[in-house]
Image (cartoon, rainbow, N blue to C red):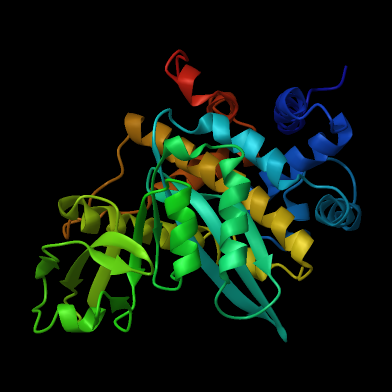
Length: 361
């Protein structure tokens, strides 16, 4: 009698779960999706050959590499499929969303991704994305389309606020968010017109650490909004237009840095997004979806492990490692060796947030 392969059993468990929420897909495809997802986490790389090395079974590395390529080239999961995996894991109630871009260069080809994600723990998990066909900033139409895609799954009443940097400005964009009743917390440029004045003229002679807010709301890109400013220790003036109360604005805006943590965890300091040799937008989009699921799982695993054994805090007051890294270590070890704890870790990814407290984890 042959011994059961615990790694393949875990792949099968997750593939069966995916079939329950994505019944339109064949089980063999979902098995390959689960297999590749597990391989990405172990390899901490998006190169097909690197992922293939971490896939079990008796096939050759060449055959496994081709299977990885097929997953991204021919099939994979759609954005809607990825949302069906991720959305049940989000807590009930209002959510904070962040929009930003990440980009890199592959040879002569620029890769430029606009992402809209939700704050979850220490990171922002990308939910929808658009691989842009040009360098530089996104345009208003693309941003609006991205928000509209997510609104089909998460209604505006659950959006606590949308946070964005000063790239994401303009009257049509601000009007759209206002009409959708999505509260805004968006950094503006020093050259932004506020009523009859430039933003920089309303906040002169500030010192580092100082916080100021306009006594009255101002007209910013066609919307009547609060404007709050501060000056960083480096001397940079940060001005934020918002629908939030003044005393909440800067604290909420600071949440934006979490998407930078996410991009770091997805790229060179984490899962190696920019190492991929793929450049076709649809393939990059599929890969980005896989990495969003991986990121969510890493955070869930890290938080679970931290409840049992908190992350050490160094003398300077910072944690010794991020929650993403902590979760990745647990997952990679369990997946590589087929440890029994993987059943608990899989349950974290397969159990809706509303039922998570019912599990004995």
